[in-house]
Image (tube, rainbow, N blue to C red):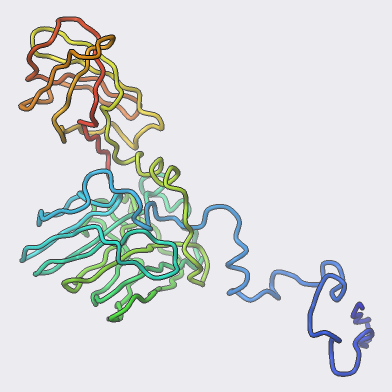
Length: 342
């Protein structure tokens, strides 16, 4: 049965009492009779194509550095793309398996500290000082799952990971305290807000987190509705995180040079954001290639001179003993952390 509305406003094809079976299907509506302006925002938002979440690792699946930290100062130390800060107190930021039921999350960040706690992340601008994906006069919605925490969530265009010179306020949300998991969101319109010429990213901070509070499920999307969280595969999320941080070492081949030096070189693919800084994060064992027994282990190794670009790393480690000069080797452990965070 088809319903027809002619030019005089007459409706035909509709039986008394409405649609016979109460449903609307392809036979009920004429071709192209439903346009975008007739679709409610709550429905249209679920029809978006492509990737919608602008935040990397918003579900906190990737933890390359560590699963906890007690360091008070600001820095990237736990979940990838998230920095932590404890001001005026002590405690721990750590990975938790306490998550919203039925939402598909594996982990949350548990903020177990006294003093003032901060947790932040960011969305990189496509070019310094350029709004890029953040379009003028366009709605965006930021949502996050919280448990047992008050505090506030703020958004800024800025240069560094904490508010400072040249920062521009974009939006703000006072979080509602809840004993159980709750999804909180704020919708804002970019209007004519633009980043300062020196700004590199949109910073997203949660401050004054309650001791014991838990957070997960960060999502920033275009539109006025907080839609269901977009879960990406671990491999895709890890690849996105590796633009800013990655561990290298395991499986890399190089060679001994001298009595105690090991030289290694590795291509960085995909490339990192900029040439990274490097630091040793673990002891490493070097296996002589072609030998099933000979190995050389350093427990007091140091990272010597190195050269790092967005596309590659070359450097040496010292402190090894029992090595054979110029013999090919292979590392057995991820031992170097490369970082090019915003």
